Amino acid sequence: MHQIDKTDRRILNILQADGRITNLELADRIGLSPTATSERLRRLLKEGYVSGFGARLDPHKLGFGLLVFIEVMLDKTTPEVFDQFAAAIKQAPAVLECHMVAGGFDYLVKTRFEDMAAYRNFLGQVLWTLPGVKETRTYAVMEEIKNDGPLPLL
Image (spheres, rainbow, N blue to C red):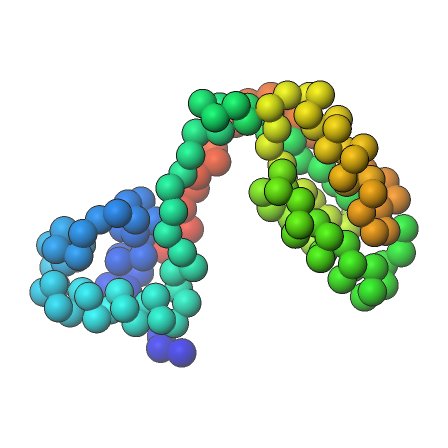
C-alpha cells in the first residue's frame, strides 16, 4: 500500500467535509492540476482510504429522535459465541454500530428509534434473543453534543 503524504491528507480532509466536491474544486483547493488530483483520488479510493460516500440524514426529521447506547454482556466469551453474536447483530436494522470492547462488558451497541416504546420492543424482541446475551445496560441520550466528527488528519 502506498504511503500517503500531506497532499493526500488534505484531499481526505476536504472529502470528509464535502464528499460531493467536484474534482475541479478539489484540485483548486489543494493547488494541483485536475488530472493529478483525479489520479490521487483514484489511488486513495483503490487503496481503501475512502470506505464510501453517502449522505448524512437528520434522524430527528425522519422520526428517529431517540439515540440509545447499549452495553451487552455475553454469558460466555468463547470464539463461537462471539461469532454467533456478531453475525446476528449485523442482521438487526436498528443497530447503527456495534463494537467489541475491552472492560466490564463485551459489546457497545449504538441504535436509533422513534421512541422508548420502539426501543423496548427492540430490546425484548431482538436484542435479548441474540445468541449469548446475558445482560444489557441501556443509556438513552438526552442531548447530542457532537456526532459528526471527522478524523483529525491534519
